Length: 410
Image 1 (cartoon, helix red, strand yellow):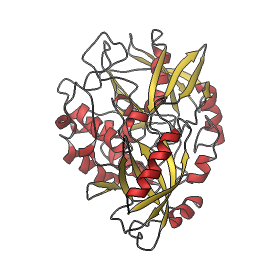
Image 2: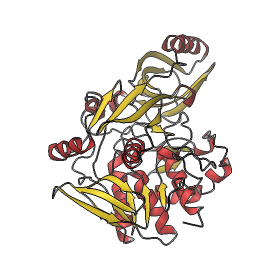
Image 3: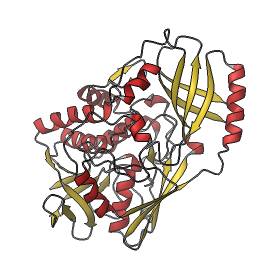
């Protein structure tokens, strides 16, 4: 039996790619059925640290009890909905060709090899591709678009098992140790191949729980901020990149209509309204040189998630650079900046290095195969060796297609 742990974008893309090479899979997750389109952005921002997102009270209590997580200096939020976290920020944007992938093991042309296959996948997801930007169909891209792909996979005979929380992996005997949430019982599931696609935090926790020799894992966390932005000229897209001095960042704009829509869980699409609006809220991500970190480790039977700031990043210096940027450019003015707490952007990765050195226990080869383990693969944003300034979801999907479609030994 081939299992995929995780029912978000990564897990479903893994199933899609494996089906392309003739392998049928079973996707398992604790997820509930989609009950709401998505929570509003303002409700998301007001959530407490470590609070599970978008689940019923019943499932939240169960997962919290199983997770045993303590969060320090970090605002990371979890979701175990059917469809996973699914990049709630609507971050399916970015020009793949410009992505700076720094792995010495993989060349950039290998990353871009399956772009045509990616476009087929995006068509199933109902995500539009235009002018080198990936524009979301609406704000609530995550759950709705994931369900489109799930329906496609069900037609391809992919099996979905919900209400199952994977606590531990017996690597030696190829057995998953699983808690059935509804029945409150334990079961063992033997596997022939296993793909971990449960997101950087959950993948890290599962590995820490399964390998006693692994003591801690560090995740990169994109430095993220909001800004009040004045636009002096009509833009072709609400996505742009800006550079000044040693800083560069990507931004997506939300008009007043957009923001009002977010309060009411309804995204008001306004891509063509730049001539009617002057002020926007910008959601911005700095390049990976200034990423923070989330340290994941165990203390007794508890997992600790600890946010670590990037000491090279100075808010004061950055704001001074923005002021100089404002004086020189005539198109946009950045009026006010609000920085996030580490973990709040949900753009994480780079916890599992891609390496040719098999002595590195917590490492994978260029196909995502875990070092010195039989038939164990990691297929989510955990195996991105770098996070560039654009949100990472679309690049992660592209990378999963590459890892599976290029692997002739799978």
